[in-house]
Image (cartoon, rainbow, N blue to C red; front, side, top):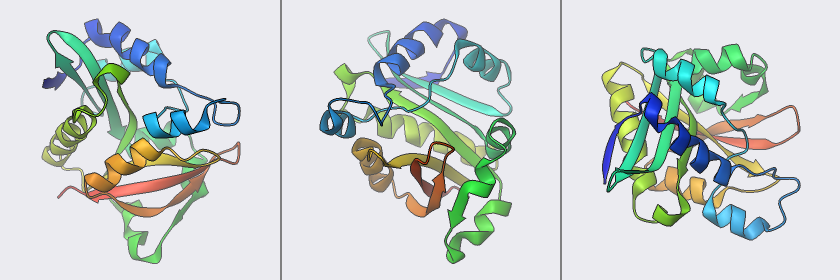
Amino acid sequence: MIVRDATIEDIPSMLRTMDSKVVVPEVVTNLERASEEGFLVYRASEEEIRKALADSKQHIIKVSEHDDVVTGYFFAYDVKEWQRKKPEWRDSITISQENASLLNARILYGRHIAVDTKYAGQGTGTTLLEAVGEEGGNRGYEYFVDEVLEKPLLNKRSTKLMERNQFSVAGTSKDSLGRIWKLWCKRLV
């Protein structure tokens, strides 16, 4: 397996993987399977991915590849970009006192990580996470933050990924639908 920067040609593979992972937590029928396999709640559009690829200063998009087949991807960007898209996000966060300074730091926000089910459990997610974190640190980001759904449906696979890679829970957020997300954080520099 190799990890490399994503290109425009990777978008169809990224979208296929994404579409196979998107669920609506309130209506998914096989809760345990979704929780164990991992899932995405929000879809990124092709246009959003194209814009991100064109703005590589603010975005990091990596893909994993095995035998010339894209097996997964990780899409991250400056948290300020996320705050522009979701201005209510910062007000929805509850941060522990010990992590209060986090909100004033330079943060890389993990938007999406998804691995094709055929390649799950082979270290692809960890390899992608490490590659994005390394590049984020090289770009001067102080922290790497990712949100993982906690309620109404715990994303066990993503939680395990964060724990295995020394992320710690810095707080929680609540979206407009009442979903509770854990805010996972790792210091990069």
